[in-house]
Length: 190
Image (cartoon, rainbow, N blue to C red):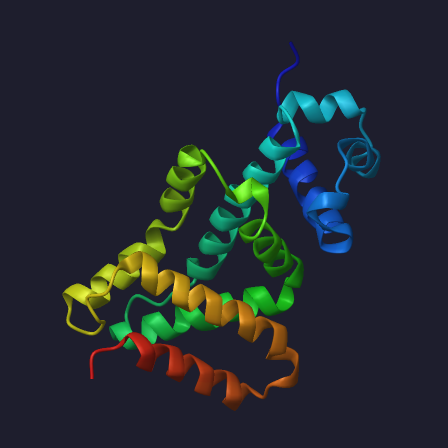
């Protein structure tokens, strides 16, 4: 059995993302993906047992990547509200400059790939989102954020950012900051 190459696996996932943003989840065919990557179709199956496995792995890969990139330069020496807004701003900028990611997340959320027995995917998603969970839980424990379910807060924020990302090209910097303030106001204790 051939061994997996992490760089090749990443390349397959990135090419799948690009293709999905153009042709959708249903249009993605393993043979077309293999051709796009420049490998034999059988090579794709070394990395992913089937299309569902590929799509679910792409989802986990993107959640992890986007969370890491959104938190990598988060200032630690500023008050909580500033850190929180910086994280939101970073994620909004990521989504605005990489719309294919948001396209994938929206399709995945409404697809059969996001249904059924996905405990392993949910566990990986929770692990990838740990910095976001910790940020929200810190805000709650320090008395800045409502004691609502952390998961519900994340759903609300991600939904708002996703919709904002569709409009961000037509919004001024001041309007984007207003949106960040509105998201803060929705979950902050006043």
